[in-house]
Length: 374
Image (cartoon, rainbow, N blue to C red; front, top):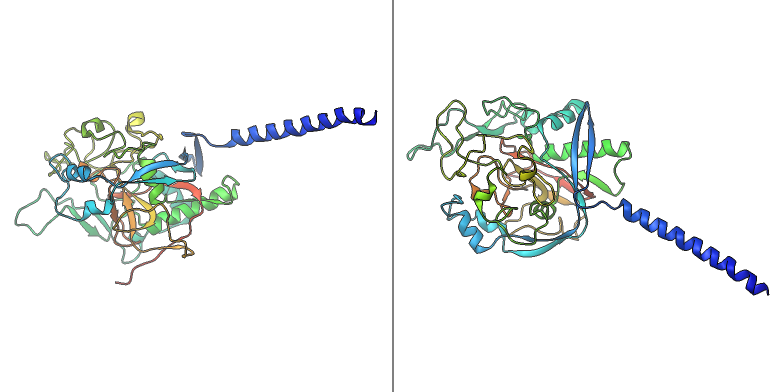
């Protein structure tokens, strides 16, 4: 009789525990970010930065022989006979095992300005003896017998505040003329700001994306080895990206020489971030992943191709002296603005008016910027 009375109480207790576990599980699942979910980071003074959640997944790193051939052909326009395309490596399936948040766009002038205003930070280009690579306003074209081989030169009096484009710099332009060290400083400031406000997990940080994270994010969730995130047809890129196109240089009636995209994107230089709206966003909702500005990633450059891991297991932290940049820029020919394109930058203090970055919020990655001994 005693046991008969006890049984309903045990059943009730079991049901109560089961209900609690079910509610807890559902609550946990509800808190898991979903693909395309967004959040805004408050930088102060009305300036914010939007992040998009990228779930774990597989993708193709590298490029096929056919893609490399197109890149150096008539339409792609990249210079044939160099080792540049070899840096991309052969196509291989890779996986990003953990989800992360990535900036919808590259960091803008206005967002970088907030960092400088709050910290007093001085970029590498602005320091005594500093310089940055900029467009030479005296350049008009390529001459066969000229010693001038390109329209870019190092300038000691230019920086992210004035990249020497000869046009007004808008707050919603992607910031350029910032170095790898400058980018890491921005990310460190933002991480500290978010941690103080308890808006970032203790096991996460705001940083540059790893090369694998960037390459995966660029393809927008596709597991195919396409030239661009939308596919292989360059003409489908019209209205999607900022690239060397049929646009007049400021104050002139001439366009960029060499292989241009066969349309006008409306900009001889930079376009505002996310200017192309939904059409300019890939499958993850990220804008300007091809063209625009070169985007730096966290990794050290390996000329044989990108890696899934940032650093080898026997290292406590990654030492970077030659950063990697991805994605092409507004000046580049179409063949140099593909998903697979990657270059090594000369040093962690180098900056250029074609280079920028976007941030990532993900697991901690120990990395240190070091200058190479020349």
